[in-house]
Length: 639
Image (cartoon, rainbow, N blue to C red; front, top):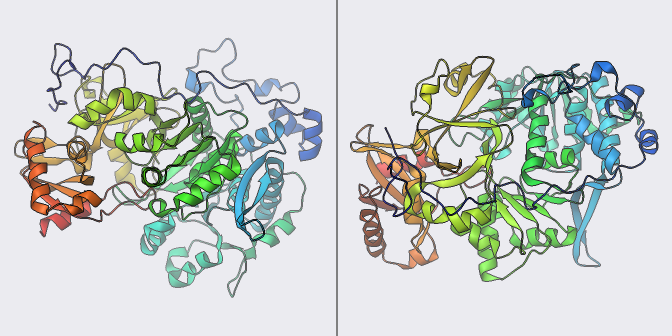
């Protein structure tokens, strides 16, 4: 069995296999920046808004503007004994995430839904913005939905969508949801050949993209054999198909009633970046999107006046469903580590941003900028950072920019299941940081909503059926497994990956996250790295995040990555170091000796004897934060 380290004084109960004790139970539970839920947004007069957006009688009924039909009584009404997670949908089982947008139109039709930096105002020397209100977004997506449907892009049609963050991105995505089509979304930063491979695997029937994206069909014609509908955003050159403007003209401005999709009906295909293996297409259903909106709202308690700066494009779509204004930042979303801090700060001030979603790489970049040019962000209430572990030191540095009461939240999840866990910066800096820096892993918080989390024994083999004997004791490191309404049903065209990642359990299943961690006696989960990246030495396994955290405390270290050279179970552990400016000023042998001294002082790292310096770590293209340790391992073997 594998246990967490047990050297910390006064941090364990009698059993050495138990997690460290923290201070008295904290009231901080990762539930948002406010102690209570904000008041509901006042609804505009339903009759007036119904006329404006042109609701049909059926839509009025579903939106709750008339007495509900008995056929649409909620499954969770009095007299039912269904579990909570099954009480979310009507007995008629019609769920379409596009209804969330229609709901926001009723609440605040003229609030800005999307704000886009359209250019530069030479007269004032400032960024010029354009926007769509919620009612404008709804009407434009209605027109597009009807145009798409008339062109043959309708319910169940997998549709590749390739457009950068823009007003059109929002309108098109909700139009596709309204007709019941299935957007297929990949990260363009993953590289052309990998991207084309993903698109071919999706077996899409339609393609919507900017002009440059359409060049793919000429460079890789065999990868688009299944596509028979083409839409160009902008100018159409020599290729066939329709333009976006033509679809809007075809659709007209009559209201469009969203498709009555079932909860388990396919809503989207989102591809992973392939940062922890081959890129895989994850199947999303309308029920999962709906549950995610609920969980995110419960977790962060967004108020009716919220303005978000979503530096990750996919998260911006939740803004429209949550009623938040989405301010599209002036940056390359595939290169957050290279974003201009001044442009991010300018957008926050220009728009009065209250919430920001940022990758750890962007958080670090802003924090480093603050250390050189002290800045404050007084309008921010919270910052959400996800995509990779966030170091406590990085959080502390960035928090210097925030007003009193604001926090950085670090939710844990993956494309396959999110959000799963969450913790706030107050708890991290006051409690869990000292354990993280001693090698206990990164605390990622407590389960969100109805999500269930278990730590199971480590194995690389498929698990045929769930049994409670799989679960390890609190304090013991194992694989994180989750179950709940936000967990996706599986991959497309990847039966082997489904077999490895899912554990059947009666009428539900558990998803193995491929991550290692342990549970403490407060119900918090501590992340210890990827299962596939653990180093199997003759003396037992070493885990990446705990070992690396020990050396990240050195003032000359920017990042550290543990890799194993040779074959398991006799791998030799090698610590690869990315130096910061101070580290580069030190003589390599002097830095290496100081790191060696740190290693021998911790039982968990005393086996590490080899330190190599690589000053440009390979990282993932989505968040620029996940380290490609497999590439560093190959590099280390050649040194």
